[in-house]
Amino acid sequence: MTGMTIETVRYFAEAAESGNAFGVTGLLDKYGNMIGIVLAVFGLIMLYFSFKARSLGGFVVDMMQHETIIKENGFELATAKIGESRSLEIGDKTFNEVQLLFELEGETYEKWTPDLGFADWVNIEYNPDDPSDFYITDKVEGEQTADVDEDGQEVKDESKPANMAFIAMLIFSIVLIGLGGGFLYDFYFIR
Image 1: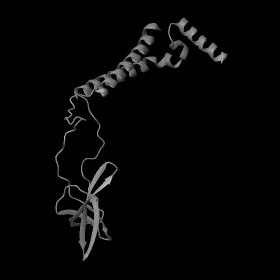
Image 2: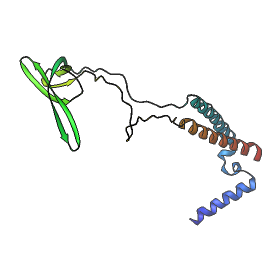
Image 3: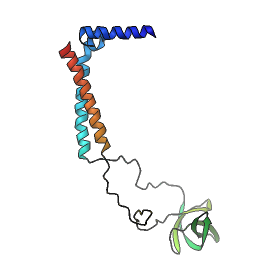
Image 4: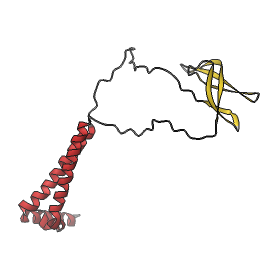
């Protein structure tokens, strides 16, 4: 441990005597100017893109697929009749379900599903190998309801989120320009 401390002190003493760190390290003595130029150029490029990000006003990368992708699963289209309805109480919650009745080749298949507000008939897809395996393909038509708080009042989100991409890119570009400028100053003026 003491040997490492002595070497560190010796390194800083040599750097202080020569006026810069380039004469001690070797690598920076030859290529310090190139490292400074590269860092400063990347800093300026990052500064340009940070202001481009600010002009966008903020952005969100949305990785979700919003378009329906239809995959062939071998299911056939049919219709099912809405039968009885029932309510299930689980704890303090009430769940409403409806019975779907699907008839194929004289045989009736049934399935209980959450009540989505469909009336009389719904479009379904069923598995020809196992007709009891079917699901609803109709979309639920409904209005978007506004968010409400505990008092029942509508909540409006008027706050504009901070453009964190701009701030992070700006700080990073300033650091890169500072490092590049420090390398160039140390290489050309202190040497």
